[in-house]
Length: 501
Image (tube, rainbow, N blue to C red; front, top):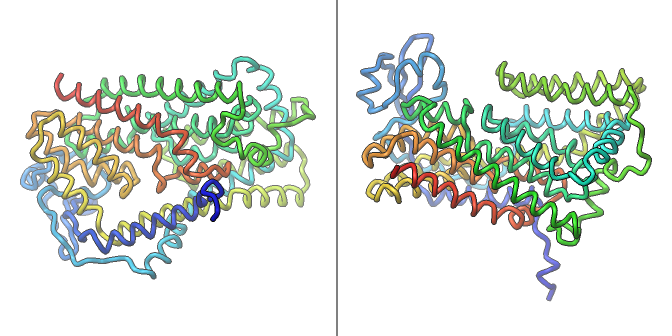
């Protein structure tokens, strides 16, 4: 009989297919159901109440919202603060089941790939750009220079990367965009004698703690607050405290692990993949020490500017993935011109780079396919209905913490933070009124729950991030679960204090 030690954990693609099969099975077990949805029609200046069988046009007035027991100002709809349909409290009804069979299971990842076409294109173009820069030797020279400057102070790299990513997460929801950072930063972390988990941790955990403690993030804090009928500034102090404490905890956790493996590489959770991962990023072990001359500095400046422009466009101009992709494609073409790369070499390098990230692109699409199964099976609202029923008669300290834990579970079924906000907040926020709890505490419970589960959520972009370095989900869980437990304790402590004080 083969030893269990020789049994390998399945790849990210297989993990997602197993999850998809599990979700398809749930659609046969969990009853289908749905709340009525309310949306605003700016063309006719009306509110539209809709469900599976009817669609009613209602006057776009505050009295209409009051009659529907929706504690949101009508101006939130008219000004576009709430642009997605929200759930209407008290309207849940069971529907005829729509269980997902074999055909739905097979079609789901294909539909997921189609739905994720823009982010998949972004990933492939980034792969091509990275390959073009590798051909120029600019990364090689830049890493050699940075390694020399940070010698003995490599921990600064962890602090800077984690803090900056968290800043992006808490302000404008930096999440999927972080896929672009892995191919660039992983060689730098490897050159600092860290393993790939330290880099993935700094980027992914940084994004997650930013999401968990969102402060001015329009895709979670503002949408959730609007859907709860409160100003987004309510509860801001508590979330700032959570951001400071949570980020500090994450940085200390990553640095402790990083320094341990820096002293003894065999302590690395992925030590058995040491050579394999380094072979994926040969520039991290450059023995040529290419000189960082003016031309290569110019290449790196163009590359860095692409990210600056991307961040500015996303945070200030409302860019979507197509605009971001155009920036990276332009950067690749410009670098090709600057380095005087001939046309065939440029095309070959670009296509090889895109091919290297094709596996990551497919993972993103398959993960989206899991969400497609949930939506088609119509079980998410049923879970929300029973969750709200479960918390209806509890002591308020227990209530807020159970609501927090329910949000971590619901995130598996509704991975979109904005989607979670508009679907759940009109239902969950009124429950807090009966306990004498401010609705801003419920908004915080939602954010902390979504952010915590994001750290281990296989239906988000986690598996795509791990696939870039061929690290298994099981090894990530081994690395991060103690931190998840610590963050859960911290979140629950802050929520409990907020309820009673």
